[in-house]
Length: 639
Ligand code: FEO
Ligand code: CA
Ligand code: CA
Image (cartoon, rainbow, N blue to C red; front, side, top):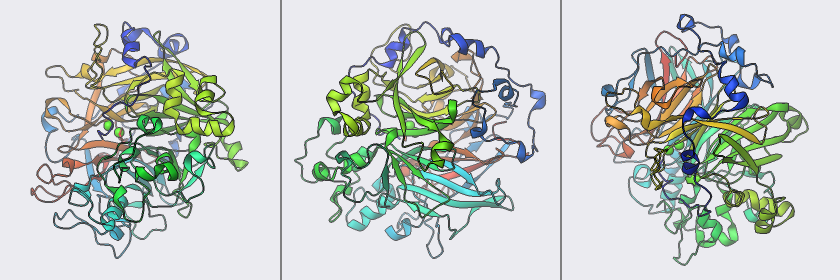
């Protein structure tokens, strides 16, 4: 989504573009061990392609990797990308296009009931669901998701799909620009949040298991719990009940099979009901404004949670902007806000297991000139859980500084640092303030402002990739660096020392999107956003923004091991969406034969642009939906 427009970072930290401009070329970094490792990257031969009927047992969970990584073992895996790509000419209509080697199915559009007795909403422009109906059906703004197989059943044919509902404007959800009643506000709220939906494949098609014990809606009104270093402190006003999650953008699974959902542009749900609110320095840094994004939730007659005029007492503003953990297998448990991971506009939380079986969580803060973070748990995740501790409650939070010479440093956000103690106070309460105002703490430490960090994914060889979607406000063009302004975005890659747990890293640029745009270039893409690397090293890139040559937003596949120049990136287009949508969210069944992605805000909600997933009629309200992708020959998706 494009609610990330204005920078609120006035720290004056050296922008990332300047750091880039100090660098002569993409090829010179990745020093030391990483450069040596690069020599060992071997792309498997095409002869071994497809492996159509691999036994499921051969699938190895990414959590099962060795602590000290066996790179050769992973490099031997088949990472071929052989499908016939969607051409530029095919990729610009009101319907999706997919490679001729693939097929797709629409699943769980906005309005799909999760329970019997709830009528499906199919896009009739003259009606909308009631708030009660919406609380029992799939929400809008499909975004990050994860497929949790039900292990006692066919794990590739049945599971719980956890899916985020990032946002939907009132005109789309309500059919009018502003809510006119408390019921309207409740409907708008119910379309947000998260869905847990039990799905299974029968006779070749995926369907919802209605009334399943696992089906669940989590909305801005669901009771939630705070945990970790901030819980219990005044900065989140711990005495009153905490409720809800909003603007759930990307996500990440944990090794213990829970779902992390990330609160991104939470600021936009708040507004000022009395016209006298003056933002604090902290509220300004997090982008709160009197009008918000126009949801009008502050106008609820009895629920003042989203009214900034009340925030000084309720501290509701500080209760959003967190990573929230949900257990899909235990629907009776309240979602938990994991405060050790810091408060910012969380795009994604990507978990890997690092040295000593500590969990490491990589996270981006998607706003112009904001930062990349990582969290490292204090100990072995299994041992911590065995002691009743969440590995996500006990650990250190760091922010990234990218140095000119291709190295980088992880700077710890701790009030043991004098500047942070002075700003936020000492002791545990001071640290609670540091985490709640992580952006300001990162400003003080000299973190590197980035071009809107979106998704992060980790390759089998431990390289970490982050999409930097764009930054048109870069106004310092430089002959050595084509990215000012950075209209099309790029993807940065780094590798941490000590198997993700070290305090330093080496980095380079994987691709500048604009380098794929030349005349007749079929590889063109802009605004990379969603990203995922499969266990074989295939890198899936999803876009959100205006594409070249009239293309709709799209999903492409490259190799995470590519070390050529940006201009030479070997990349193929697997899928294109519909007019004015965004392609986001990506997860697969364990055997990688089924992939789930989303088209978000098709037509920006306008029936005149597209009516997808309904046939084109110019009238039906377009609905966000999940797209199930498979190879016609049953092979691994991406091959
Ligand atoms: Fe939710 Fe930055 O995309
Ligand atoms: Ca985006
Ligand atoms: Ca995004």
